[in-house]
Image (cartoon, rainbow over all chains, first blue to last red; front, top):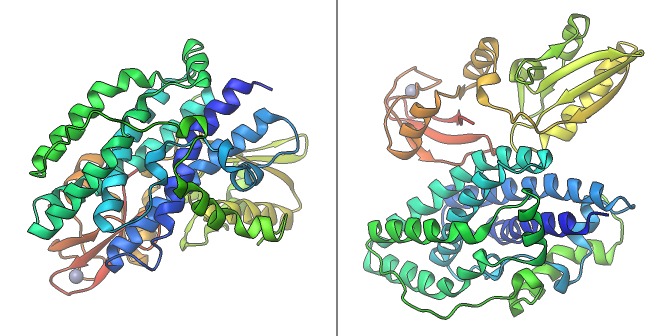
Amino acid sequence: MKENLYNYILGIADNSLILGQRMGELCGHGPSLETDIACTNISLDLLGQVRSYFQYAAKIAGDDRTEDDIAMLRKERDYKNVLLVEQPNLNFAHTIGRQFLFDVYHLAFLAELQKSTDLTLSAIANKCIKEVSYHERFSSDWVKRLGDGTSESKEKIQEAINDLWTYTDELFHQTKADKAMVLESVGVDVTKLKNDYYKRVKDLLEEATLQIPDSKWFQKGGKEGIHTEHLGYLLTDLQYMQRTYPNMEW
Amino acid sequence: MNKTQQHIDPILIPILEQVSDPEIPVLSIMDMGVVRSALIINGVVEVEITPTYSGCPAMDVIGDDIEKALKNASYDSRIDLILHPAWTTDWITPIGRKALEDYGIAAPLEADADKEVLLNGKRLIKCTNCRSQNTKLVSQFGSTACKALFKCEDCQEPFDYFKCL
Ligand SMILES: [Zn+2]
């Protein structure tokens, strides 16, 4: 099995899986019908993308593993998502802030992944980028509305951005699989996305009349499987059915 | 082979036209442009379909329905899901666009115009009920992943718009 490629795909897909699960939690709990539907549609897009990645990963694994096994039956330490996407839904501003900080990255990442020499990955990226551009429009639009809205909405989105800022730097860390895949022109060199990312985020925050956090301390670990306490609870929810009734299907 | 072209054996077209998107029953999968190739190879029909949206739950159903329709016409088949080239709303045929409109879903605009209506609130989409262009975006995300929600400010009717992809 091509272990680096397998791990590389999981690193990409786990971000979408965990963020998709978080957005799915809002089903029936969004602040308005329209935002509820938007959040669950984003969740559906992300989970759909995950299926393409995991089907490919299962093929590379070459054993009897299926896309469902990869999604549902790994242990916490085996998930490679960044810490940002596992952060809980504290309030709508927090949900939007998390989505925004990820979407800007996600869009830039997929633009590069389209150039991958791995044809399956470039095809998936080509498909996903169209959907993610709608996500980024939605979340950046809301950052501006909340930032330039009432004093309360401004305070909440500022607080969310300040809280979540510490998780942004990890997006640009390279894992062992990343480095190997960049060498083969399969993977994206995320270190090269960093400057443009912060520039784009800062421009949008300024437009939203928000302060740019100046904290220099950043959290890391998710990509190596060292997660915040929130992931365990999320996985309990996500995996409950498969753990309780192994191999059950709808 | 130019992959943006469809490669479909003409004999199979009437059979494939019977299959529709379960979420938009008036739209055949042929007019939606999801069938990229369908050829009879050694007596077996090999069909390639491409998903509209990644999360589209209709794809599994469409695959099963194609298999059934071909079986009814005494063909064995194999259905493959392909991702490249990515589906685009440009592949919806003129007949498909008309079927969407008649069903109450506004057909996708060109990419630039789509951006204008979804981002800047320009009024370019015609109400599917009264044809007025005095329509307003309610939400970028609608009842399914492929649609946005609009409202007509003349007849007050809410309706879906098929987003450009
Ligand atoms: Zn009208």
